[in-house]
Length: 311
Image (cartoon, rainbow, N blue to C red):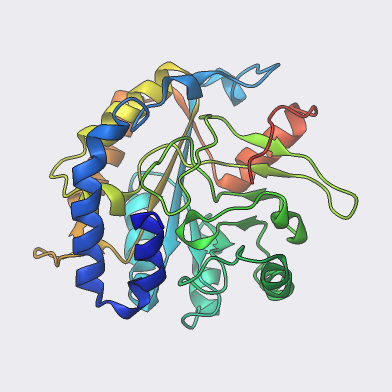
């Protein structure tokens, strides 16, 4: 059995610090192996058939998302929203519905200030796609939460994905994939820095898939132990040059808003510096939108099937 599969089978029995230590050391040893496809896969720059560009003629799309993995992250959401808001940005916050109490007051606070709320699965510890029966059972509860929260978007924990099974959800978009990320538990990238349509089936309508295209903060600053944001900046520059969608995942549970960071945290200044870079380097050049807005735009402007989905 491949070493990464063995790790994910036994990780629930390990203390958190040991999980990170093992993942970090394995990743750093094999990082050079993927230098031709990560962080940039040149083949992913090809636009969809019939592509005519972003609204208002903007050079690229800029989308911020936050995955709230635990109660600590939940408690940091307002602080992170304030950072986004201070730059004039809005983002989506994706909550794990059943692992911790999700405050209705917090959800209301976010939506009233122009942020979006999505579902980040029911639980964060297992792959819900390990069988069709398991996912169909979870889909009932996920759909209930989507309706209760007035949400239209979904992202699976740990970026597991099965684009066919996701038809069981009442969603306008999914965001459980990526253009390229060979370090994920399910490492098959979609090979595009653009949204794409997942066609419907006999039971459900299709939905829009929004792959993340900027490396996750946890990967860069916790596992890879990067001390600056050069990879974020360089990847953003490449996406902007190719007119794609720069979609970022930042986790409030890994950001430290104080001076001293722990083994599984990084200083908030990294994120602030990146937002400053976007605002200064690309002023007036990007279409900043929530995920639901990107999905609505793509659905309205691109009717034909334009991507062969990967399960």
